Image (cartoon, rainbow, N blue to C red; front, side, top):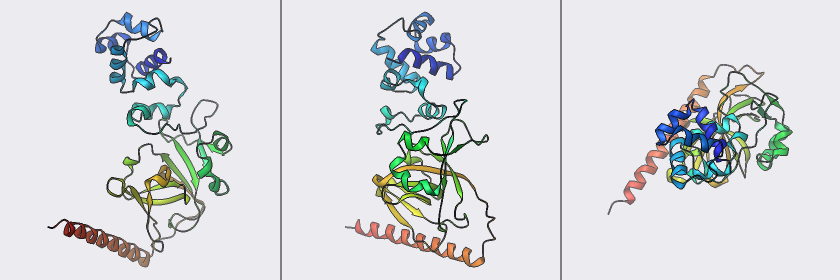
Length: 273
């Protein structure tokens, strides 16, 4: 049981003393010390519930998961509420790598490795073979990965650019009109502007920046990973956007708005007696 080490770790991460935590939980410092050092082998149900509510971590996680083995980004996600035992999500620990200083690497998925990513995204052997690097200006409590994109669907971001992206745990947080790396079972790895339609239609609408490409929908059960666009690296200098390109984007947006208005109006008519 990992309970003693876990509550000690969580307390220290909050910079709280034993006196403070014990007082807030309603028992003595010596009792808390006994829990943290494993002197009390079987904590009471009341104590487990108290610690679970205090740290906002499920009892299952406090007892069954060795939190000291998790990376900084995994601990931060847990503390922000992404506890699989609480949310009911399927347990899948994101496969990751660290450097000699135990800092998380940014794994690189080049074009030659792109085809195998859908099958290998949660395979430690596959992930460990990917190139890695560090970017010191990125937050340590987030998980990042770099993906090389191909094609012209996201111009002015050019072919072969490297997309730096942040792992998205909860897909309900996907924001309309933001760019994401979307990993799907059918199409593999794609880079698109995403619109969140989970609440009504249980899917995502994917749109390209290049107006020559039609938007399309992807059912949520076809998606295996989402990575939010943070930055990109390219050796090509994008040229100024032409007036024609701007007009094409404007027309595409107007067409989308009109379609949504029609769909909304049609839904209202069906509800009339």
